[in-house]
Image 1: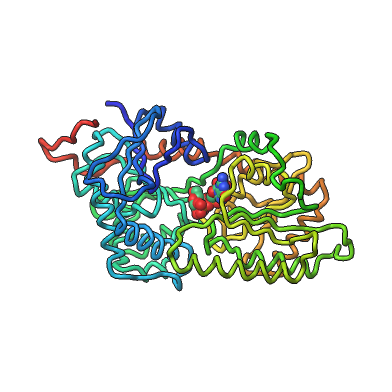
Image 2: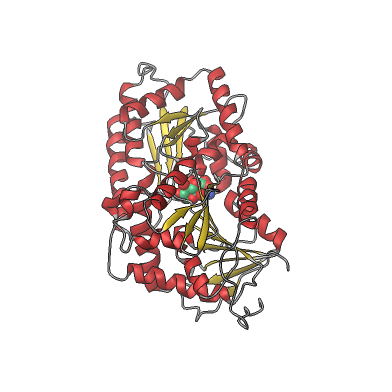
Length: 468
Ligand code: GDG
């Protein structure tokens, strides 16, 4: 029987043309296997337990709907007010409200029942991210013996933080229902293994896999990447000047969803500190800028509203202190910018600031490096706490809590000699190529396909419904 791939993610890509590294690489893998991609529809609603088929692609796209209550309890609630802050080492921002956990479990249970009607026993199921940690457990409960893989895009939590969760014992148990747990970095794998080591129910096998009751799971790192060649082409394409003729002399760029994990307030403070202390302060003809693009996300969650206000305040303060009639030092764009413009901005920027306090990988770091002109490249300033730092060791690595150090790195990046910029860029680009998106999907699926299944097969007579 043919092994189709079934991908499950929180959001279903809706457009006709796939874009973005993750979407493109999964699109290619799905097109090759003729499988399907399951995800939530952007419009809320009640799907009555039935998937809705979306548009034309070489594979099927199936949408489920989230009701307003699901959005509140599952999405904004348990996923983004419990799991997200917990995995990003912000236990102080965890909100435990009645209904969050049940809402999260209910969406996973309902989705599992819908998936079980779609898949055949030979299908490979690949679940994406923290929205669906219990999904394999629910699918096993319905008798599915398929190979099921899970990839966590965000950092694996530290052991001490896990105990803040309601029913923390479920976390290890739920993960053990997957045949393969994929994580971004070796550091994440170490934290995951530490959790299993601490759990008396887990047993380590000689091949490194973990036996948990009747289940055996493997834990491996698969650093995610982008498609560097396509991104470079986009960056090279001539588009109208994104600054409309008012291009700054010298600028650093930041591109992040407006999220507290991305370390934006300290980035702004560091830029202010750099302006205060920069060595070429006397050269009044150079007007350096920070261009920060930060589209809003998860509006309605208190911590996100707070950080937006904080950044507006910092921008006003720093611009008030340094701006001149013809110079705005911080350009804070609290909206999304189209991809071709973004690629072009990356290419023009002399430095890119990625200063996450915690980050699974950070694709912006890779996009910036891919977009550079190798003959005259800009400099990546990269937080030690972004997964990307594990391989991109030739970036200017910084501690995102240390304002002084970051201000120094901005100064060093703006003044770095061409030879050093080239050397650092060449090495960073190698790392981006080594972890290209296609390889990420291929290597995960290769390991998943070879994993042993120890799950009982479906009880006699219980066959899945044929895929419609
Ligand atoms: C999660 C993990 C992990 C941003 N603003 C605009 C825009 N973007 C694009 C970027 C980049 C993507 O969004 C952001 O990806 P990141 O990796 O930086 O961060 P998260 O969204 O937090 O992603 C992260 C990732 O999953 C993948 O596993 O790396 O650690 O947190 O592609 O360019 N794109 C456009 N306009 C914008 O305004 N067009």
